[in-house]
Length: 294
Image (cartoon, rainbow, N blue to C red; front, side, top):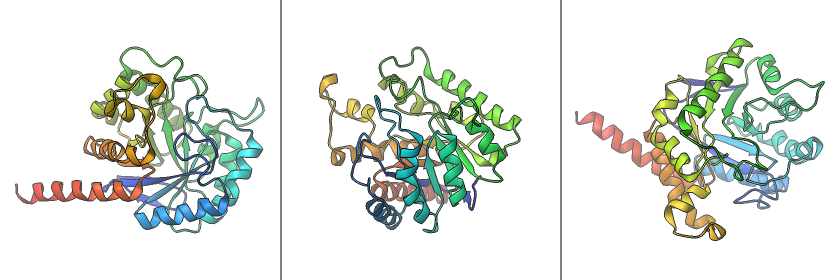
């Protein structure tokens, strides 16, 4: 199984680690740490040393309650970093939902569009949608994510009922629209959107029942890193006190990433690359030993 992108055909026979680079002052876990281009690029290089296979660069926070960022401001944060990151020798994914940003980063040589809106957004009534823009591109990869409502309201009124068939239907329809536009299946990866308008129980249901999402026939990306559901599962706190340091979130984040891979995810999107890479090597050693001893 390969993920076809602008410059790379990514072999997903071995799970890939996507390192997160937040070029923003207000992301939920590391906002401000890499807001300046020089710091962001240094972080990119460190993540590669730590073993990242893909870099995912974003300039607008999608944490619950985050404000929407004007197009020009997002471009101003993002383009200086992307301009240099595309020369690092690995696939570069851009976390954006705006077609104007997509076009700009693809023009610079970015490989993947990672969109929380699953390409549904349009910059204006006379602008192309993300779907049309990506379909017109000769080869970029795309990650389609499920999100309930929008970042401003998603956790104020999360989903109700059985989350898995609802996410499944949404992602199925998103892939059908792209297929109708002529996009090759090999360019598409799916993300169930952990934490994007779901309750804690719903998030864990998506992990426990990942096989149902894999039935669509597309590779799955899992984004559990430092999410509040992991805090809820590991601490008994009131809603007002659901806080945990980034250091304390490493173990549950890595655990969730390993479980996601065990359940069939082919890409894990993480902040803590080194620890995740090490854990996945242990998982691979166990799996290899199990096959050799059969």
